[in-house]
Image: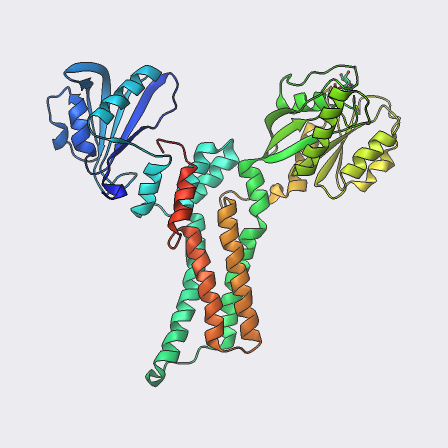
Length: 456
Ligand code: GDP
């Protein structure tokens, strides 16, 4: 039996008490199975329902009513998956949704694997891979920018751009092939200049996509950020200011934040996955030492560092150590306690590209900090209504296409035969079509959809 001949079912809403819960059934027997468990109150038969129609009624098993519900029917190919789909909207209780699911399984459906509905949509040509991945991005979007970028991808902006690039290369290759294969047909020779113009224009577009990748990811996925500084500079207070509520323990006793406290906060147009670490200093206290080692490890892995300094105390060797740790990191220096008399040598911070003066306690300087963070991450120029590469898979395909195309350009300029050039452009086309999914391998496709949740 092919994978597709199974009719699958899953709960598509979260497992939690809510107004409604949706049980989605997809496959050639979807309507037949729905008819076994759903009784329309109109007396009409489920099998006679047209696509895009709804019926009120109840879910029943062995003649016993389970819940009042609404049935939605979609007929292939006009459905999310491209197959017949039935969706039962019942009351959203954890027990009742599970009960309806069991009734549908008993009626002959099989449990759906993670992402199987979207995978079927992909395999049935309803969505390409970038659009399917955008479904996942939309579900996991943490804010307006992430959702906006996912919507742009859902509408196919990236696919269109990639396909247009691939098409340019394919058209040139086809022309070249015709010219080589049919010398008698007086096909005009394509000039090296024209090929170079086309290849360089595609290269520029792909490079532009790659150049916005990091900033785009920062906006859509968030950035691992770490707050560091010697004890008592105000790291916890800053974290609380950014979080908007008291999360870290704030005390006057140096060394109270022993482990790493995490939170996700929005700062300007970026989501920061913040970690407030133990103050970094040399310590004899064992528990504190573990926290300090951990802080150094976190700092090394973080994509952004907020290095906090205390303006009310003189610069010392512990501050010096922080500065050294921040070398080669993307870093914003936060000069805190700006509300107090300054005893700190501000010139010591001139080593940082960006220094922001704040009073974490009084809540001043947060906007300036947001701007500095956006600038440091390059997210100030991100346009979420334009095509963006959404994940590492897409970035790799794009990067490999750029590499192949660069080879083609070099080969052309060195006067290689056109055969040698098209080997490289064909490889670039393969990468671009792998990106959209038109030529993606089974293993890649399975891996992508396995990261989805069940019911999507
Ligand atoms: P941490 O050890 O770096 O996490 O420092 P805390 O956030 O626990 O703060 C240490 C002390 O400095 C606390 O008493 C805070 O209230 C105080 N503090 C933090 N930020 C400011 C600030 O901007 N101005 C003033 N005046 N005090 C601050």
